[in-house]
Length: 79
Image 1: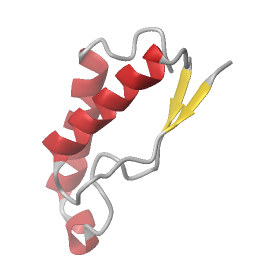
Image 2 (image 1 turned 90 degrees about the vertical axis):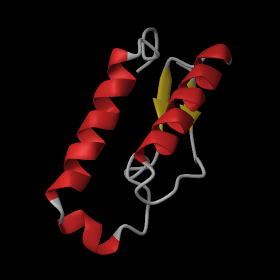
Image 3 (image 1 turned 180 degrees about the horizontal axis):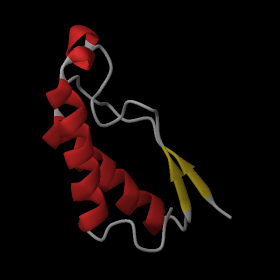
Image 4 (image 1 turned 60 degrees about the vertical axis):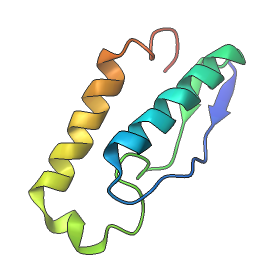
């Protein structure tokens, strides 16, 4: 098993940009033969959200970003 660990330059509350960087990291990991890709726990919302974590739409945007990653097909062949 080849594992890709990803430390990305994520921005707080930049769901579109963070999602695109995650997708790119999945493409790179697959190109290098990884079958497992891991990233930090807040890579979709970004760090430093502070009070935004108390807002329901922050969680909703994270779920939407995750859904778009899964629906993109980028995750085929990698976990």
